[in-house]
Length: 395
Image 1 (cartoon, rainbow, N blue to C red):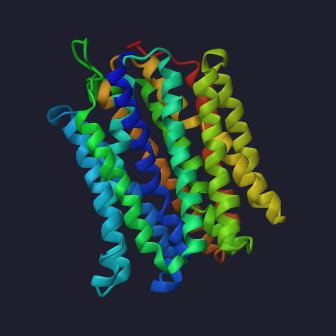
Image 2 (image 1 turned 45 degrees about the vertical axis):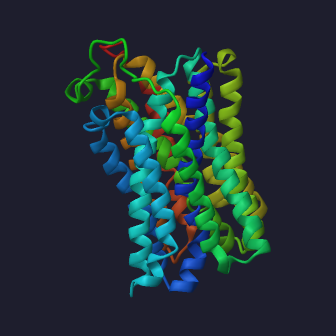
C-alpha cells in the first residue's frame, strides 16, 4: 500500500474513536443528569433512543447526497457536527429553562455527525488499496472499541481526580479529537468505493434482493445486541448492582469495550486463519449465554463478568456482517453501506430502548430489560443460519 493511504486509514481509525465518544461518553453521565437536572429514567431512555434514531435517519438520507458532494466534504461535516454537539452539551442545558431540552438538542447535533461517520468511514476504508479487506474492516471497527475503552478509562480517571461536577471541562476536551481529525481528513487521499465500476446497485435493486434483507436484519440485531448492554452497563453497575461509580465504570463499560476490541483485533490479525461464519455463530451463542448471566445471576461479580464477556461476543458481529454483505452483494457501493448502517443504528436504538422500557415497567429493574433484549442475539443466530443458504443474484 502506498504510504499516503496509511494517512487515510489513520483518519478512519480516529473517525471510529470519534464515533465511540459520541455514543459512549454521555451514558457515563446518566446518573449525574438524573441527580443534577432531576431527569427521570424514561427521559434518559429517550436520549439513547433519539441519538440512534437521528443516526438512523441520517443513514437513510445520506445515500442520496454523499456521492454528490463527495466523501471528503461529507466526513469533514460529520466531524464538525460531532464536535459542535459535544460543546453545546456544556452550554445549552444552562441557557435553556428546560435543561433536558438543552441536552436533547446537543444529542441531536452530535448524532447527525455520528450518523454520517458511521456511513462514511467503512466505505472510505473499503476503498483503500489493501489486501484482506475483511481483516482491515475488523481492525477498523476495533478502534471503536479502543475509543470506547479510552472514553471510559480516561473519563473515570478524570472524575475520580477532579470530580464529576467538572464533567463539562472533560466534554470540551473530548470535542478536540474530531476537530483534530478534520485536519487529517482534509489532506488524506480518499478513493470512491465505486471507482473502476460502471455503476453501483440502485436502492431498487437492493430492495429486490433477498440476501440484502437478511443482512439488514443481521445488522439490526448486531447493533441491538451490542448497545442493549453497552448503553446501560454503567447505570446497571451503579443502580442495579450497588457498585460505586469508579469501580462500576471500570468493571462494566471499560471491560465490555476492552474485550469487544480484543475480539475484533483477533480477527483483524488472524482473520486469514479463521472461518468468519463459524466465528460469528459461536460468538452469537456466547452472546446469548452472557445475556442470561447478566439478567439471571444475582451475584454482582458474575453479572459484571457477564457484561465483559458480552463485549467479546458482540465484537465480530457488526464488522463481520459488513464484510459478508460486501462479498455477497457485489457493486453495492455507498448505498449498501448506508443501508447497512441504517439497519445497525435501528438496532442500536431499539436494543437499549427495549431494555429501558421494560426496565421502567418492572420498577426500574434493568435485569428484566436486559432479559427482554435477549431476543436480538437469538434472532441474529437464526439469520446467520439462513444467510448461508441464500446466494445473491448480483454476486
